[in-house]
Image 1 (cartoon, rainbow, N blue to C red):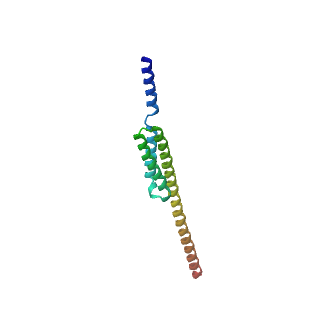
Image 2: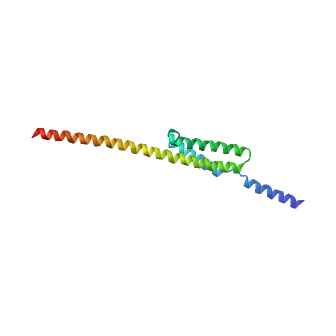
Length: 129
């Protein structure tokens, strides 16, 4: 009887370890989602979908945890983290692209202004002769 009780206790402990809440995965997913929000992923059309997918996977993971499906929750949390990181990357890329386009536009205007100024100076020089 004692050996059966010991065996059951060991089985419960192993099961408890295997079924432990995926705290590290949850923390990483939360941080990734927060980081994506901080860079404005929800304001960028290209990254919004990935942030929505990350939130959805995170919510489903919490639901899986509530019913004791820790392995399903773990997989969903990994997906949430990956989607949030993708949202972060796409949002940053969009921001950099927008900044580059603004810089090119400003440079273009400066170039036109410089050309116009050069032409005006050349006309003045011809008139002064």
